[in-house]
Length: 214
Image (cartoon, rainbow, N blue to C red; front, top):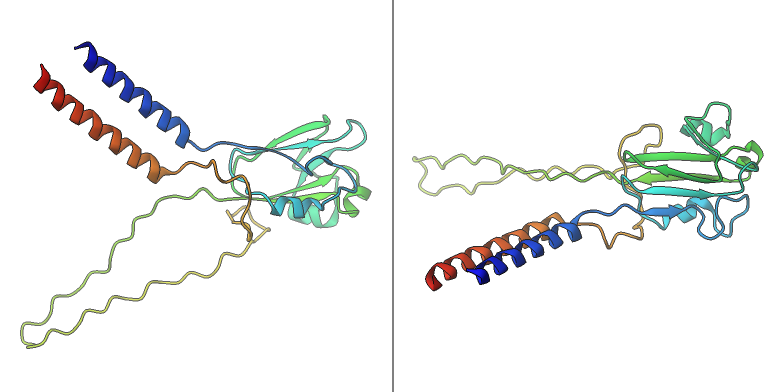
């Protein structure tokens, strides 16, 4: 009896570890890398952003000297014109953290308009959350009884959607054109389901064996 309880406890622990390892992880990105949020970084801020993959719940860390600069979250229009007068959000504490709570484009500029004009600004595109969709195959009509040779059934060709284009004027979810880093630790629903099914089958087999032993 004690051995059966030990086996069940072990299976529960394995299941919990599988759930924990498959859950998506949020990342903190230091904007500009080692340079931080400065006027003339070694790498352009938008080039830096293109090397990464951003998802909902990730955060940006802007590091700069408090009192000498700031970070403004703005619209596309204000981003292009470097308008610092009507920001959507202002970050001024020197170690500013911004969390992505939705997918789509985000625009950041320096609180100093002159610095913004000198390219101290950033665009980040957060990936859309993928949802599982089910596709229903097209219905097929039965062959006519009067026909000696049934005609082959031809299904409608699948609809081809146009390539997604980044529309920075809206908050619509969009994906960046280039693959990003930091994607290895993202969870896999398919792997999780396979893992759970495996554990359940092991548990069922153990229960059957336990009945024979008892």
